Structures are given as C-alpha cells and as structure tokens.
Image 1 (cartoon, helix red, strand yellow):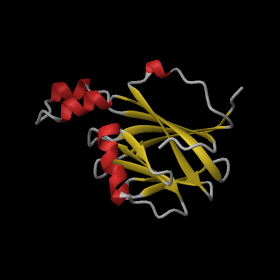
Image 2 (tube, helix red, strand yellow):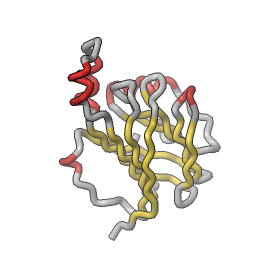
Image 3 (tube, rainbow, N blue to C red):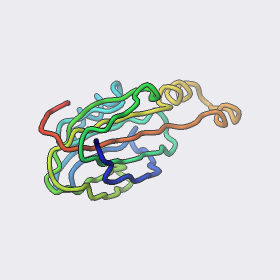
Length: 158
C-alpha cells in the first residue's frame, strides 16, 4: 500500500502566468514548456515542470511525496496531468519565476513520476476574460488549487 512520506502546503503568487518545479541543480527555464503549459495547464521536459495559472491571484499548492504511486480519486478534480521529473539532488525548487523561489527536500534523489491535479482553473480562466472583475464576481471565485504528487519511477510521462 502506498505511503505518503511528506506533504507541504504553500500559497504561491504566480508570475508570468504560472510557476515552475525543478531540481536545485538543474538550469531550467525552457520557454517552450511554459508555452505548452498554457494550453495543457501543466507540461514538462523531464527536467522541469511548468504549471500555468489562469489568474493572477495567489494559488494553493500542496506538494506530496509517496513511496509508490498513490491511489487518487481523479473524478473530484477538474483535470490532471502525469509527467516526470529527474531530481538528481532531491532538492525541489518551486520557482515563482522572477519573484522568488521556495526549496523543499524530497525523500531523496532520483527519477519521479509526477501527477499534477487541479481545480478552479477553468472558472478562473473564464473570469479573467471579462474585465474588470466586479466585486460580486470576485467573491464567488474560489481560486485555483493544485496538488502535485511525486513518487519514484523510471518511466517518462512528458
């Protein structure tokens, strides 16, 4: 049975349309992956994962690490993507692009399967297409939420 090894919650301010995940020793910044993420919500190269946010407001992010692929009820999520990330140091960087980064230690170095699950993306995307957002509309927006799960893997999902 899969065991969750860590879980951390963050409040992320997206910059330039999102945020990125990569190993602390990688020089990630592939502009094509960020472009792909705009249409796929999340995209990866194997060395970097870009997550596109529909809005400009802070988003909720949970990072989980598991010892094996977790059982997840994907029906309760708006969408999900299965990607891969090589993490040779085990240090995960959560980059807010030009406005800072947070570092999190994964259980160890290695290749990880990564599941990105999200809610509120479509609602925020639709709301952002109508400006200005009224005070009434802003109150009903729930915002975006992402849960990113990591587990050891040798497969590529990008």
